[in-house]
Length: 398
Image (cartoon, rainbow, N blue to C red; front, side, top):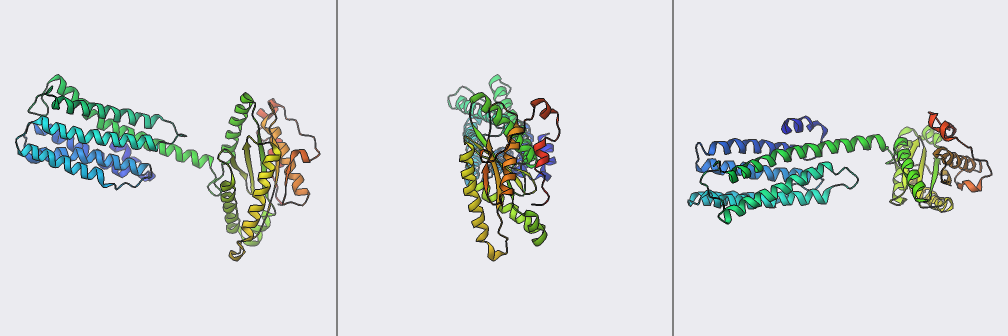
């Protein structure tokens, strides 16, 4: 079933899917050969059945490396698999009993399960749900314990058997557990693939592809979360609305391709200049919004003014590439405890209008603008599909 599901996800170009599918196929083949070994045990059957299982776990490990964007072709696991298979073949040819071969097999799988668990633990993304990685780690921990216990039981003489599927209680527990782990790992791989697709969808919904900024939806979700946190912790933060000056003329004179290039470059420069805690969003068109946690409005305005000059100088240096020099205007204000989000956005937007009216290419904080903030009742704001500040920021001429 895992193989069928993984196959259905191949079109999604999820890294590691191909190796995980190959690992499942090898495991299925290994299980079939294991079932035949008690019927017709011979050297080739022993070698091939163990080889399929060994390379199955190696491909699963390499698929995980590829999934987490690491180079997949590390030679260590393949070398380990070859030595394990060679050791099992040597012990079989020299007449050693099943216990000696089981010890070699167990050592190899303990190493592979532990390596895969270490890889997943080190590569998990803290911002993503832990469920899929946690499931994989739990299965791998069980694999380490079961393989180690099986190897130790043979090494200490607690288990004695001449055939693989001898129906003793201890052997049934070991075989059942080990054969259960591989399908469970396949399920974990499907869960990782599903989480990868969920992450992509969330990124497509919440991140603007052109500029790297959060979409309007993604930004306001962050803003609501920060307002709740600030209300509980009595913190501060400021919000700035940024609008590129005369952007329509860039589209008209140079074309929309140049406009997209400008927007992309602006997004790159803003993202590179912000702190890790800052939140950058795109309201639409050439209008952006930035949230500065922990900064008062004057501090945020100073940082934004430095960004404005940096952006202007950067585009001035690009004149050889025929990229137009342009500037932006911005309005900034800080959050007032307990107020609706719409009030804060309206004050920042009014400060932006004032910056435009004063000649553009400047940053103003709301306390530099003589105006009465618009009071938006919380109930009315919740009912309105398009708050007043949203309507006020629609500009067709600049």
